[in-house]
Length: 117
Length: 89
Image 1 (tube, rainbow over the protein chains, first blue to last red):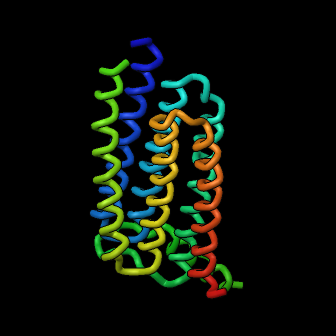
Image 2 (image 1 turned 180 degrees about the horizontal axis):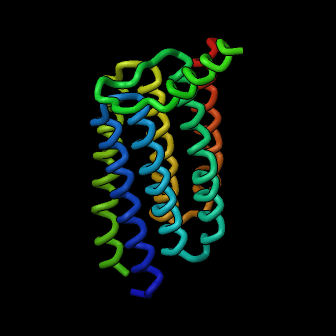
């Protein structure tokens, strides 16, 4: 019952709860873009906390687990950005509950600018 | 050390297994290809975490190297899938 074992255990439990919440989010969200938000943010945090928790539980492996966790932290948002861009250019629409579409306003502004010139 | 082990392992495995089941439901049900790609992203990251937890159970340090390589492969796989959806290449 050393202090780093208890701390590592707490990190691991919190990380697994966030992984569960991320998976629950992608099941319940109505749209691809919402599912991307839930799947990326919660899953990245859950994976980071779990892996660093293993590193703290067993401090021999601390630097290796930190490398894995930082790699996931850096590359997961990049893959979600690629998926969101692909979903937009493939023509997948937003849901009906959408209130405000910022990208459409930007595209309309660009079109209007070209018409004036 | 035994009590910490029991307190940690039961909740962790319960939450991860229920999370995997929910993600597989989205993978089966998903209304478009991009939704299935999101489910695959979540599943591969969860697999990486499970590999790191296996390193703790079997007490061998080599599972961490496997987890690092698998995380690289999952990232490349999801980005390749996204580029295929976008351009049809």
